Image (cartoon, rainbow, N blue to C red; front, side, top):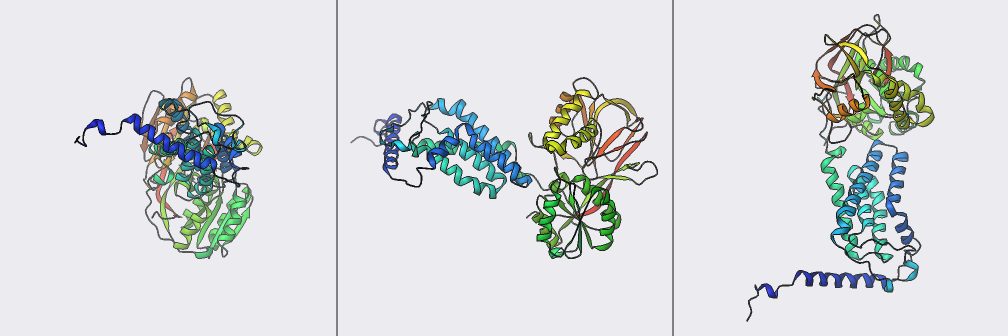
Length: 501
């Protein structure tokens, strides 16, 4: 009797492939012969709309434009990036590895068939890979948006079998590849949830359920502040919400600080900057409701929505953060200190801010930023200044309130908002400013090259400035005297902040 371990009695790879193909064909034919009345008007059109990823590009654009949050924009961007990775894998490796013929359409009703049949090989399904990659990428950043996108992605994948252009295993393999592409991208560029929580010493703050004893000042001219103020009123019915024009902001913040046990602010980083200075002087905790275009400070604290801030208020969860300081302040030598929560900068950035603000009301914030960068880098000259006792030409001097980290190509984010340090980045003067700025951005913190340097300091002294030289702090622009001194007030500000679980 032959040994069962004899290789001649084991199924060959060709035999195994033949068996799998027969099973695949049997399932395909069974599905083709079934009647799916609700699918006929939907699935063929859905399949065509997903050609070349157009359906997913449109979905991402809609999420980014109307999603109403940074999480929605991140989910849209990650979905498209995951789709791009999956498409590259399909087109460079997948289609060429297994040259499988498309199914014969005899068993598929004519009404289901696509008008234009694909001519590429069948395995794996590119549509299924793109759908799974986009849905998975979106879900990794936002479970809510992932739940919205998932049924559409599943329908696109099913449509490829329904219209007869793929076998079931083609679709399963494509979906697996798409999911793998999304997770592979996450390994290179972590999601927001994967990034470590910022260092944040806990602070005492009163719990204010329903906003009792909270006065919220809203800058009507900031980004989405007016719409956000409506959400604040609904979520915190006992809070006093005061809307004002930019020129009234300073006075309203001072009045609010005298009436409440905590100070709330709704607006962009410049508005939050003013509120932080008032809160620090009066010793009040600050509640931040992101209502601007970028909202760097709020997002670095993990406050992305009104609900995040409301949860922290209800529980009395708060942290202490450093407050950057520069002297003299915007009022000049006789005025008070100036403060910054995010960054202080000299060089091309202040001009970029001014140009962006000029164009933003007409074309929107992000397009205005791109246009401003192009215009500024084309026409600016290096700044001449004496930095730490050495005179040099500079394209940019960036001083961050805390060390800004980078993970892959992801934007910078602070992991510790109370580290007592200034993140100093210098882009040296010379030709090709755009290349120099790009090199500095990619290099990240604590790096040096002939084009740039990045170090940590407790204080920075800048002298030899031409009076009237513009500088920027938290998106606002002012003009300097001959000299500037920048340092920090460690843990000077208490901010309501949702605690990490």
